[in-house]
Amino acid sequence: MAGIFSGKTVLITGASAGIGRAMAEGAAREGASLALGDIAETGEEVAAALRAKGAKAFFMRTDVRRKSDIDALVARAKSEFGASPHIAFANAGIEGRLAAPWEPTEEDVLRVIDTNVVGAWRTMAAVLPAMVERGEGAIVATASVAGLVGAGGLAAYVASKHGVVGLVKSVAIDVAKSGIRVNALCPGMIETAMVDRLADDMPGFREALLALKPMGRLGVPSEAAEAAIWLASPAASFVTGHALAVDGGYAAQ
Ligand SMILES: NC(=O)c1ccc[n+]([C@@H]2O[C@H](COP(=O)([O-])OP(=O)(O)OC[C@H]3O[C@@H](n4cnc5c(N)ncnc54)[C@H](O)[C@@H]3O)[C@@H](O)[C@H]2O)c1
Image (tube, rainbow, N blue to C red; front, side, top):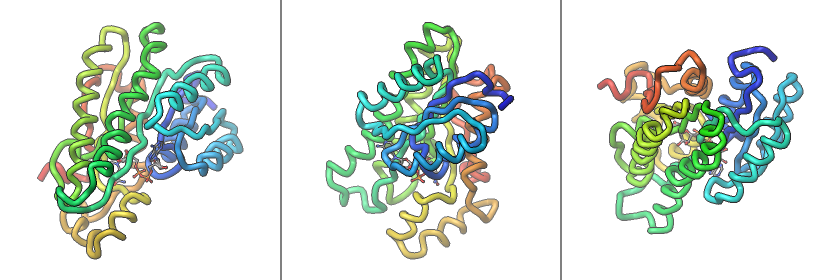
């Protein structure tokens, strides 16, 4: 398939569902060869559906809390496609439970930080050495509008996503002279299983959210994914260290 990612190997974590799946579909449309990782085995179906449309894609069970899993995903991308990733979407993330700040256990908080911030770092660390050697690359980490402003009831999640934005800014500076761009995607609330889980935690959550939305609606996964694809594309060649809100105007209030 011809497109802006023709001849490029693209790695995506959290690719089995939601925004990650939409990133995979968008990148496949743009001609990418796709290395998809997730802890949910339904990623096999995502990869099979993309192959059925003519894309090159494989899925591998990958837990971003394990460096060895991400290294294995990168190694398989190189062996299947002949090139380590040119582009990486560090997208896997979890929300934790809606709760007062003192309610979660230390284990709950560490799991959110480990998955969201350290997982993004592990993904960057796994793909960057080959990108530096090549003198070219783009990374987009999925942060959140909760990486730009606070949100009640999700202290660990908000802390983790502010961490992702900080990580992106710092790494972007470190690798800018190597021809690599690193940006953060900051979606507002997007209709995925994540929002369904939060709504299950708290009756009235969805209605309360809608009341805060300038556009009066949540986003859909492709609206977040297309912004990430733009950030990773040559059209964004002078954009790095940026945190792009894709939130229907939420953070503008
Ligand atoms: N949906 C929203 O409103 C929203 C808003 C802002 C940011 N985000 C962020 O977008 C990203 C994608 O979320 P989504 O809304 O598509 O949610 P989702 O739950 O539909 O998808 C997240 C995917 O990540 C995977 N995952 C979870 N832990 C993992 C791990 N340890 N290793 C590998 N994969 C793992 C899940 O299995 C799932 O397939 C997350 O980083 C999330 O924080 C979502």
